[in-house]
Image (cartoon, rainbow, N blue to C red; front, top):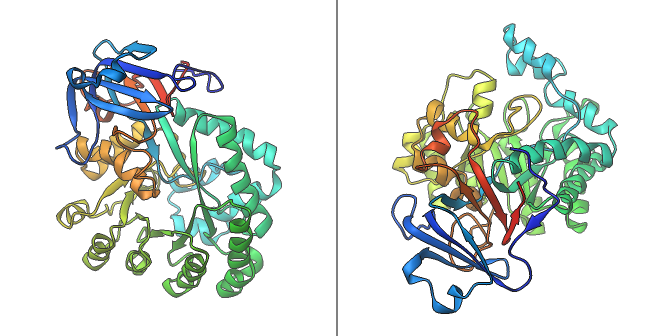
Length: 419
């Protein structure tokens, strides 16, 4: 499906808009499962959901809507959310893909100067306009699958100016397309060559001052890091999180992807919004996430691209009632993935998630992972009118099909994006 993301129809001004004759998967936590409502209707006023429920229970004042859209029995779900991406970057790493096919491990590629540092060189060389042009192509693919909210990290600059350049580009994307962008400051992603072997100096000279500047410019919504043997230790990440805490910024963390350093427990101790990857998560870490209410963001694209064999402990997370989200982890090296629908299929086939878990993980729980539970992620009164209308017979099709996009229409803040 090709969409014109600069044009919208419907839901204009202060009028009431009505999407009726629909089947709803509300994802409301007060309802069981997906919160399914047959013969449903969604009413929108001033860009927010005024009602989502049974058509016969629609309040009379909303029934007089000025704009009415017959969904002809189609399904409506909350708009999808991609809660972990590295969408802004320069270049590609197709050569490293070939290296992996020939047997090179991720750590071997990284230590040889490839991996993240390869993208750093490309990203530093491009202007904001060039980075924006490249990122829009990736973003449009996500929007074409009904995504309304995208988290975008920095982390391919590793110097103050480029890190902030990436965040400015991320902000620009939200003014170019009908999308909600959430930014994460990820300067603690890797150590640049000029600071090799001097992680703490890099944190002191670049990460912390850059965080101060980005916060002062209003560029940072959350602070992230990569806690791993090839990146930063728990104690080094603690320095970053302490600064974030002092600035009043929420945190999240790439943790337990390649080994178990205790990153998830560190993240939980700072009430992190999310802890991401988690293939090597142990029971202590999972318990800490459960106690803190931190979302476990699972990233099957990276698992697939790296041909990993150790899966996140999904059953343990279920048993401890840790909320799980799914995301593309779109990045040039380890998850060159721009399909949230394929991500759901991977979550089911590779990690054993259920249909309900996949859909919850790309709506309600993804919103929680970004601190947006009050704004979006479910079809509930008072939330932003972000939803998608699908040409499907049952929600399982969104997870089951591969290379199939059944999007009929996409509504963002009450405005329908033209297909």
